[in-house]
Length: 247
Image (tube, rainbow, N blue to C red; front, side, top):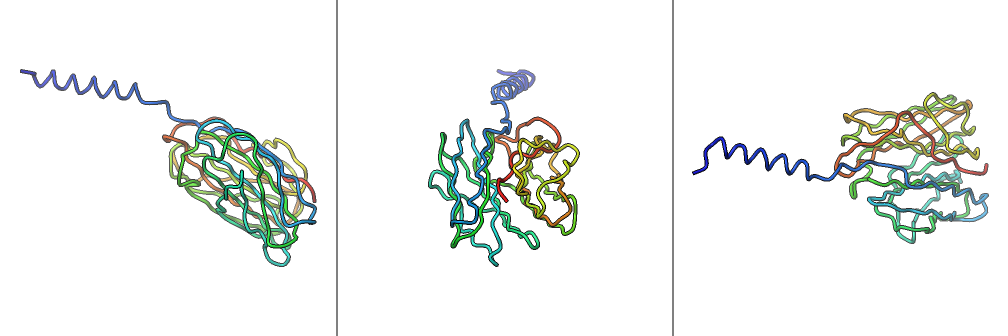
């Protein structure tokens, strides 16, 4: 007959075995970036190629469009699969900014196509991530605007441990002085940027993205994305992953 002490020892051994056998928690990482340029306001769509790879993929598209006088954007697709628009914001006396996302985009090189209901200026870019939870993302979003300002900070409250925070921003005057801790991967100068904190936010809580620019008006959409298994991440600070091209 098994003693109580022996039974406890077996339960402890099984618990430790399950812990050691558990897969390592996923880390969110950047897969690839792409700059869609702009359509010079001559057509009703914008198309560019983006290449994705890796596992647990998540695609983010930042898009800006003219006031004409209302927003004409009807949506974006990747490899002909419709993306989900999380938010849209207007920059005072300037343009609209949109954030689109797609879970599990097809691997390889495919076209991002953003469309409008009429001829309008469109500019955009994309970033794909790996290690992102396969459904229900982004887990939280927030928006913010400012007028006659030189920087804009917008916060979002993350829900999952080790979530990442991203933000798409548009300013009337183009991006200006770099805010401390911001690193720009490249810049083409029309004031559209897609940024992330390059960090796993643990414990969950309020986290902000801040962008700087020459004095003007601005709007930003921020969102948090959760890792598969609530696992870690890396890095510190805020970086700018892409900027739109054109005017």
